[in-house]
Amino acid sequence: MKEGIHPDNYRAVVFKDMSNEYAFLSKSAAETSETIQWEDGNEYPLVKVEVSHKSHPFYTGKAQFVDTAGRIDKFRQKYSKFKKDDAKGEEKEG
Image 1 (cartoon, rainbow, N blue to C red):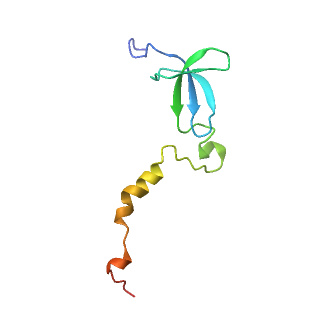
Image 2 (cartoon, helix red, strand yellow):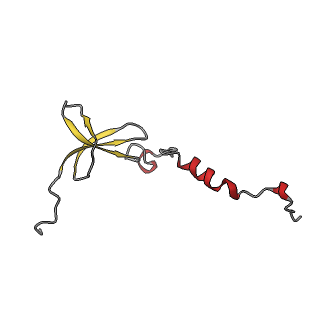
């Protein structure tokens, strides 16, 4: 293997699925400033994820609605001004 291409900060990290509060401990070099106390009593760095194998439709077999940051509402607000309004004098063909 090539020297100097692997990260130096490879350590145990807790990944937490924010859609269903599922968490698991794994090794990673992911950067994070948050920590969490794990089941074994030790404190580990915390990486928050939006989708894991416990919430992804491919693994669960069912679709789940996940709107973690109000993205749908933001989209609707942003583009609501582009809705066609028939009351403004637009005529329909037919």
